[in-house]
Length: 178
Image (cartoon, rainbow, N blue to C red):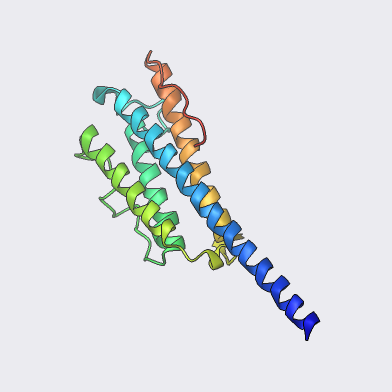
């Protein structure tokens, strides 16, 4: 009986430790995502509105299109892939299209999308982080989907920083841990 009790205590401790680590991952992830939001908003606010249409090359996304693309992808990764909502169709969606949106409206939309993403992740069932799903014909865990999301934000924000330099602007100082 003593050995069974010790065994059960070890199993419960290991389970709790794993759950605790998953919660720490979410806590750290939310902190990183919020810092990423703050930096992206500073970048978006720093670029003059008359430069929002700037493209580094004809086939590139404009500064504004990069900003809205970040929002669209964040919405898709969080609300659709992780949250189960039907995906938006990029070709027909108007929420994340640049057309007829002011700089202020685009920044507001990005901020709202970060809020919705953070809310979903805060409510996410951490026991599902290791669940696998199809991601562009690859099997990826939901944890990997979260990591891909932050990588994607960084990728497009980096393009936006280059666009600022190409327009003679000094990008905002890098923000740590984002």
